Image (tube, rainbow, N blue to C red; front, top):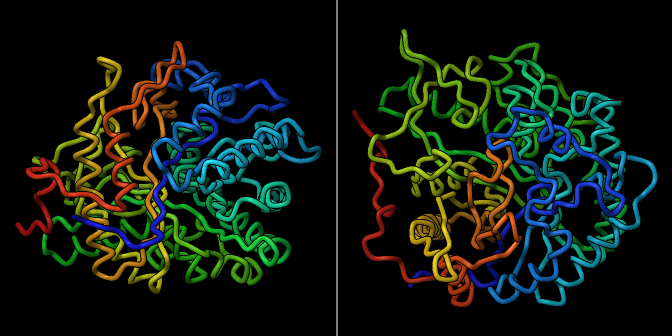
Length: 478
């Protein structure tokens, strides 16, 4: 039996645009994702988040489902444009009432709310009037929005996440153009990321100066990162793997813990990489009470071979490929999820140790981990054994990292329910609960009961013969 530490946090996660719907209800303003999804050709199945899971109208039912599972925490995001319809100015009382009621019901059910302030759905007005995250001035606008949230909800919310995966905003939104706002550039990602880091610093300073002393909460940022394993023992491949992780995670985490971008980024990006002012550096350094980590997959990394094509697929590369000189690949035996992501459980353990060593043993919370599979209801349930095997294997490696000294304090499974998967629309299902997008009916999957059992026992008996439990390639020495 694998058992986790006492007081370990077990939760699931969602985001506002992916589940709420009600895109023009309750006084909500438009977001960049409302505009993006209504642009022909941007979403693979032509769908939008206009209704999605209709959580805006079914939130009580969803809270009761979480309580029945025994969740101790629930991570969700606030829609900025539901609280401030144009991103600044007058507060929308209907938006405040909606989130306040949700928070109260969660607490009534014994579920701790973990609130993300920004999960990609920037108010459209700020994109049109300020050029979004490319405007340095947006940092103070975000700070003011954050202050509204701290004031309205901070008496009950004790865990805040400023930004979810700023890498995605930078690379997929401003580099590859496949996420909102749909821009393509090799320099805008670095500018957008810089504004986000400054916005985070200003929001944290505001929270610590004005709210944290009386509200006694915690605040941090959530970053995503896939592990990069050196393809061979070659020194150049080892350096390429390290460089890949620094361009992916160090890009954001180094400023938070060290006050500066990684050396390899400053050397390779040059003048396209903005510079922190002394005040920025003071605000940003040490602005984390915990390290939020989203992790899904692993790839091999090598120095680009002569004549080889550099990996430029945005879902596979942790940054602008031409700036990294890294060639990525997967072991031919690795199985994949519906997203095309390799299932490599040992990668999460290696990444946790990398974080632990580089940033001085910080408290870590895995704020997302999960998998997409083609889930079809049958007989009133969905028997998703592959998801259970995935979770069994990843949680075993996570537990091993704890045993080896990593200060890991919680795990949030992505996701509570199937939802709108960004540019993939409704073609990918990550949830513990199946959602019929025509009727809105939620159907629990077998994994929901399995995860509920893990929470009740604060652990689990590892699966015998788990197909994902002995994945090759750690390390691969050719």
